[in-house]
Image (tube, rainbow, N blue to C red; front, side, top):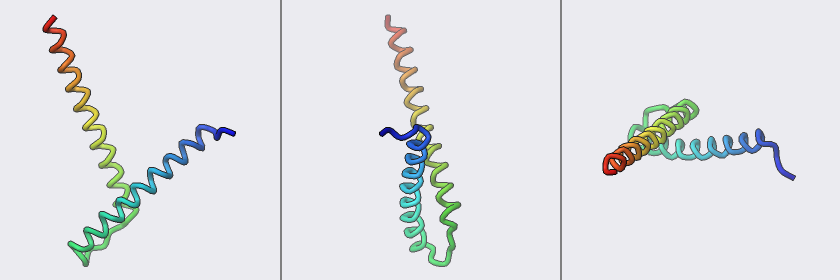
Length: 79
């Protein structure tokens, strides 16, 4: 039996959060080696990692769209 769409979305969101939390833990462990006396708030740091990841993903997508538009407008000029 198929699950409702909201349940699928929640599951995907939970998987995404688990993945980013794992990556954040790796980053924090690495930073603790560099600065052993520093304390890191895992939840806050995870939030920062997730927001920056979204920003970078949209930045890359925006750059690809701009490049595509530039390429297509050049193609139009050649006709």
